Length: 315
Image (cartoon, rainbow, N blue to C red; front, side):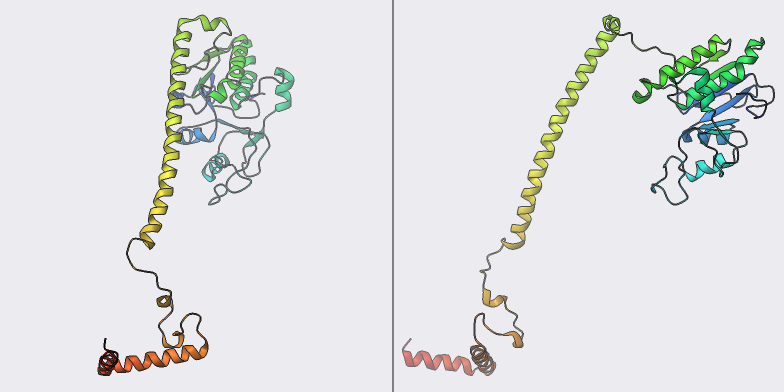
């Protein structure tokens, strides 16, 4: 890749600063030094670049932007926010992508085939790998001509577990390749990108490895103990919730001394005053008797009637 057709940095730049999102050194990138071209990637880096500058952007993932107000909609990627889309659409320098996008005027397709033909198929495990390889393409001819040029990496640690295993070795490969072409490589002291993996087998003999392994075993034992306690607490909590539900039922139905009476469960509205199981005639007779009793009660005649009955029976 050549910078004769695309503007890849400020006029006369001597180095390419590759910018990731590791907070340990992202803000240390040479934004104000115009001898550096700023090549950045990832939605996580655009806020700091929007406040400073970026000359080239890389976004090789499948482009599935999120329209405004449709976060999480099918067929979108939440990290491709409307704000990030606007940033790329307004980017002044090239935006290298897997495909040219009409909504991003400066989008350019990454030359995948040319990269594979030149460097092989084995090390394309991250966006940064593409960035270093393409920076080598730009700077190697200048280094060969005796010019002092450099690649710097800021905000790139590859320290996360999922990155460590396969992305970091690819970055280390291309950094070594850059050095072999006479390109200086700068990394901030905060970066551990060039830390090699522990040597297989013999690394276990190192006293630090032994001590850290023992500490790791202690932590796992503590986790297992706490997990067992957590599971026991969850079990006991569920049992108590079941007991609470039973208690709430008892409080709602069995906490007083009222005797159940099916007769009193029937509505006392006159049109429904029919004893359970009674025929229509019996219901009518019961209703008339009830009405008569209520009439007597209201005049005091009912009390006298009871007294007369008791007198006759001798009770």
